[in-house]
Image: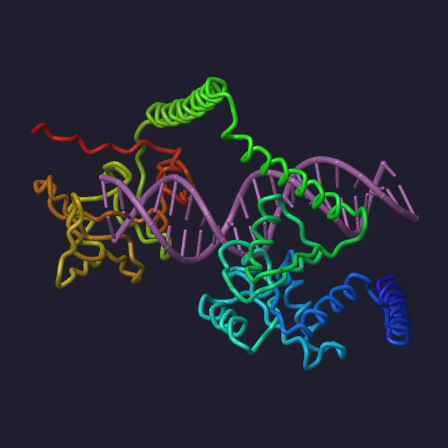
Length: 347
DNA sequence: AGAGAGAATCTCTATCTACG
DNA sequence: CGTAGATAGAGATTCTCTCT
């Protein structure tokens, strides 16, 4: 059955490939792009081509680089973000590509919305969005990338397609924004003040709700209470100490139990760094070599002695009666046990 | 030093829509 | 009705900034 299906698919794919090799299909949108680039290249101007995904960036770059009508005219380069799955660039690579574009090495830059904001190239005189429409802010910002005088802005998409409709809606919203900005100085002062007051009240109410939710979360933890358990190295699973040793001050979680330091490696710096209320003295490492946090002293609480400020992402916990380790990405995400807060001393 | 907030830049996923 | 493709929004990751 599998073999039959495989053979059928293979035959069909070969037929499709043969058909397109003999009669290459012309994508009207690609053809429009080629003609636009050609026209601008003949005018010796530089431009941006914006697409939606990194995959399109690289594919379009390869296509344009080898297009017979564009050879010796269009010299494209491309840029994407740093953590793309398909193609990614380091900051150094990104800067190198931009330099190619700023100089005379390349005259077309193909990119995702990475360059939609912030990129300022005075000689960039046109922006082409290839099947890529975001919101009205994106439209305004991408158009703003063309800084040269008499610059042009294009959207390549099908007539009355969703992208075409979205772009038209963006334009309507943009017009509305401009109207509102122009109208603002002419508004009735009393009416405007009432509007601002109502908006401010609604914002404050939102913040109050957030605070109440935070309080609720704290109450939940208090109800959960402190639990017995152990603290382990996230990398090597080694037991580092008891959960009861853990204390907190504001957002810093620390251990100052002497026994903790016997099971870890504390490397002191030659020079100490002084922050507002703590003195950073070095680094505390697990025996596997992974850093667990900083070796510190609270300047205003010298009686606590040396402590280790634990990095949440380097450790995990095992609660008594539970077989599995638990981990948190941030201390504030802890919803499993309460931690003793460091009592402030009265001055 | 640590933490968290926020921004930037994708990637993933749930939902919607069109089609056979 | 089931499936595939499109889309919006959520989530993940990384970086920068500010505060303690």
